[in-house]
Structures are given as structure tokens and as C-alpha cells.
Length: 287
Image (cartoon, rainbow, N blue to C red; front, top):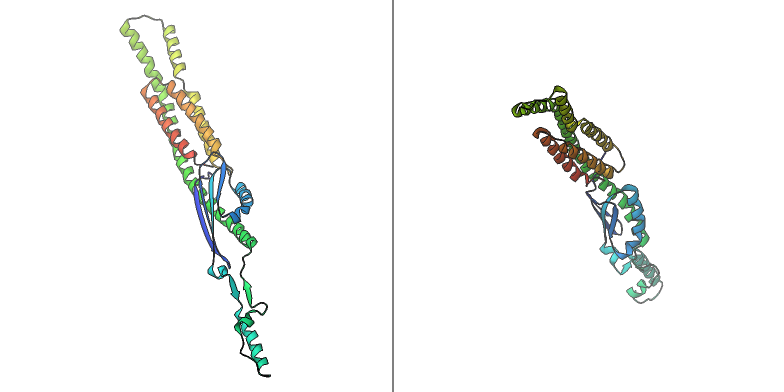
């Protein structure tokens, strides 16, 4: 099934140390191009992120933004273990009952090992959390691209059906067109009072029919339509192949136009080219 190269996803998650927010935006591009916007401290993640992206996507310009926020609790310079401080003070008070003892100095309590500690955040933990959160975020992007790709596939299928209808119309018209051209030739000869034997007239009719013969072009149009439908069912990247098939369809439409001898087939050729161009524009967004 076709998958669009256009998509967006965003995920925000809270952790014990703060929060992480991923934003992914993708648009159409000839190749796979990945751009990162994140703090210098997290640049180490670029290579593993590129590896994940390459496994998930084959084409498109992808902008990846990572924002993180550290909570106020973890940004304090010094943390006080109040539970341990209370235990130290209780122990000091218990000792003071054994004899005269000066009032407990809070600064002395703070000197006790473990009462004071500097808060710190493990950068490796942030990196692990970021990588773990990135997987579901890019999966959301893939789902968005798949939904849009399904709509593009429906759009293309409608145009393919319209192309097939034009082919049927031209096929039905050809015998009538050739008969009309035969009668027109005979009428002109009659007006000009030119006498030609029947064999010569038949030769002219045959030449005219050969020039106007578009059965081969119509057959190839049907074949290309079938191939486009088959390609749309593939699971891998199909954008480049679809673009090639649009070129082939357009080639047959141009040939049909050049062989046209009446306005009906010319109009059909123009309609074919319009339908093909509509598909080609949308296919530029398919991966």
C-alpha cells in the first residue's frame, strides 16, 4: 500500500527527573534526509536515531526535535535528607539527657554524612529514556503517513478508473471514425470529380487506417494501468516506480494525440494527459 512522505507526530512523557518531548515532521524528498534539533548534551543520540530512522523509512525529509525539561526538585543545588536529620537530632537529644549538653547546633547536624547531598541527574538515564520514547513516536509518524498514503491510493485509483473509461470510449469510436473517414474521402473524390479505381481507394483507406491505428497505444495504456494497480499493493517503497509508470502513461497519451484524426480522439488524449498529470503530482508525495 502507498505511504505518504508527509506526516507529523508528537509525544511528551514525564519521568522522575523531568519530561521529554519529541516532535517529528516529514515532507516529500527524493532521498532520505534527517535533520536534528536537540541540545549539545544529547547529540550523542544522533547516530542511533539515524539507524532507527533508516530501518523505518526509505524516503522523505525528516525534521526531528527533542526538548527536555528538568523539574525544580532536581535543579536544586543541595538536597537535605530531613528524615536522617531528624534521626540525628533525636540521637543527640537522647545523649544530652546523660549530662549537661549545649543546644543542638543545626550546622553540626548538617555535617552528619548523608544529611546533605548535591542533586545530580544521570545523563545516561536521560539518553535511555529518550531512545525508548523515540520508537513509539516514529511509529506514530508512520501511522500518519500510512493514513495519508491510503487516501492518495484512493485518489490514484479514481484516476486509473477514469483512464480505463477513456480507453473504452476510444476503442468504441475507432470503427465509426474510420468509416467516417472512408466516406469523407469518397465524398471529396466525388466533388473533385477525380476518378480512381477501387483498388487505389482501398489503398488510401488502408494508409489512413494505419495512420489512425491506436490499438497498440490503447493496449499499452491498459497494461500500464494494471501495473500501477499492482504496484499500489506492494509494501515496500513504490514512489519512484509509480513516477516511472506515469512517464510511460504520458508517452502513450502523447502518441494517441499525435495519431488523432478527429476531435473526439484528441479530446480523449487531452483528458488522459490531465488525469496522468493529476496522479503524477500526488505521486511526488508517495514514499
